[in-house]
Image (cartoon, helix red, strand yellow):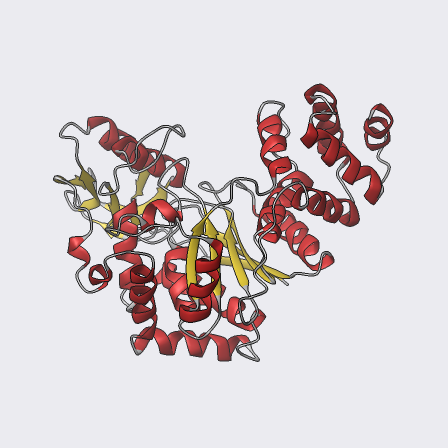
Length: 431
């Protein structure tokens, strides 16, 4: 291992065998943390070639279980978002692309941070559960074109161990390590093709557009090198996506969006990502054709019908689709009023996310309990005009005293006297 650390420190390329040895021996405990820390720091400074990144990814894939989806008919396309605030895309995309016949076999996790993960959000629907056997999971996807299952306990154990180490050794922000971490989980989950939504801006993991482009290209290159058709969309996270931040509130927003009545930015991003999913699944020959198919199932009600079937197949109460008011409701609804007139010039996404977490919409630690009913609805976005006393945000709370949440929101939203342009939604695509 000393020789391999030295080799990477000096900027040389490691072989497939060397990379697989490092990951296997580290996972089994034969390589100690202090040597792996030195290795990750060498990678941080020297980077990795495309082949090294691909081999590192596959070494992590083979460190644990992999999901075999071969019994599912058709090309399985997975979507991954690098995270953000109010990111309701999976709740919309799943039923939307399933409605045009693309199989969506989704493995999702619980959230740590601003709001719950996809599973937490879906559990806002009474009775919905993801504890299903693999056999039933595959049957549901073949029958309904969509099912969601919880993450397997032993998927990419090398990545979990390595991530914990990077977190405490200041090596998280390394493109080869981030890209291989994300891609190893997607590949282990059994997808044939992968569409990536790489966020950029204040509320994203990657704040800088050039860094986001570099990460997107690294992941697309890994996917294509290891035989998975992969592409990426780089989208804005300088402000929260859509209007809703909070579990039940986001489910309601997903229902609205599938009915064609959702926020413009959320609908547009879902149609863009969905078009690539349909194209990679070979259900359409062009992006325009794919988009037309998605718009059609939104307008004729098929997308909404697919959501209902999906929820009911996993024990959920499908009537929430027709009556979203039966989703969990908060006791108190408070309006955050604008203190001055003008144009909204900034909404600091991660700070607004923290305000939602203070209400109980997310987990500060793994042990935290989520309150599915609480959260925020943004009434204004960047570029919108607001009058003094008009509501900027509607706060859904189960706590009576929310001064800390209101102060956090006031410090997160800026108002300017001069006109402000709304930010661009999609910056680039990497194919």
